[in-house]
Length: 369
Ligand SMILES: Cc1cc2nc3c(=O)[nH]c(=O)nc-3n(C[C@H](O)[C@H](O)[C@H](O)COP(=O)(O)OP(=O)(O)OC[C@H]3O[C@@H](n4cnc5c(N)ncnc54)[C@H](O)[C@@H]3O)c2cc1C
Image (cartoon, rainbow, N blue to C red; front, side, top):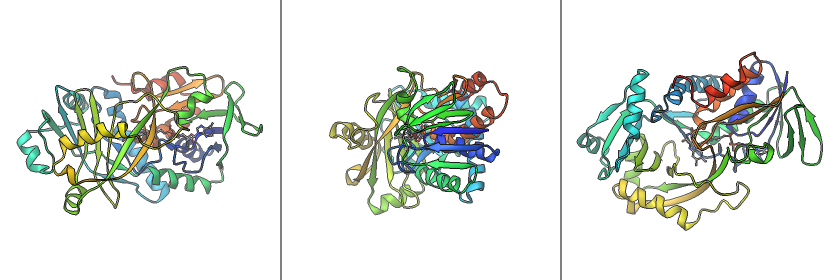
């Protein structure tokens, strides 16, 4: 079988890997460089964690996701992941951590509640004033995202089953015929076309408002030396205060301390300016000030504007379209952790008789909920 894949973010590359591993031929088209710094997958890190509020379907997928990454590390000959453990904090009435604890207990992976006195003792640099409840889980960690994309692209470049067309933008997709037309007019045909075009997906597929690009800002901080050392072995932190979700990535292996929020801007053009604006940064800085001791001595190292591709219910879209097409958009700001798994599983469905509707339901995290 021959497949065409549009987009070389983590989803397109992982699907190419899954198909090539099973002996199928793949032509992969990427409009930019490879890795493309504008892709959602191309940033220093992405988190993988079990707590998922009451979305038990996604929580259940985390162990298979870790196993899929394990298989990728074996193929690549390098592990691009560091375990950190997961600290979940809630305040201002939010109950996300409690719901996560309930959901994880139901699948045999209990979280430990930390009394606030213990939280302060264990993480003395946290200013836990607004924190109402804290939970700890030993699992979870950091995937070195841009290194993974680069390594996977390099690996596939050496695979005789795969042809990488970098700097080649697909202008149109015909999912009935299994045909793509690239800028310049050339056409390419295959048995299956997978569109894994990230925030650009709506330009190729008629999805209306189902998948919306959402510009998100992250801040990398430089910490004073003693704080850097103290945080270097720290956990990832997921914090929900009222409606606002924040995540914090500890500085590890020479990388920065990163902060981002999980509030969707639901606006922006992935081809527009990637400069972060003052009004985008300010709320993030204010939230950090309330959570970390000594925050005023932290320095902003750099800012990054990146895109989520968001659905209204934050579930993933991986769906068959037409006789030969698939739209693959597992994002809503939480898809990277499932990249290797999504790729292997889509490759398996494409090459087997597995029901595409069942696949879509699984990818949407609806199985077992
Ligand atoms: C700030 C931020 C933080 C995040 N944090 C996490 C996290 O902690 N944990 C987690 O699990 N997930 C996280 N995510 C989500 C995760 O990064 C994304 O879900 C995932 O990377 C999406 O991958 P993708 O392959 O679908 O899209 P992309 O990586 O964007 O890849 C799409 C590719 O398609 C190419 N393309 C588009 N159109 C065309 C065309 N017409 N022709 C050819 N090529 C085309 C693009 O150039 C791009 O390279 C985060 C995302 C962001 C932005």
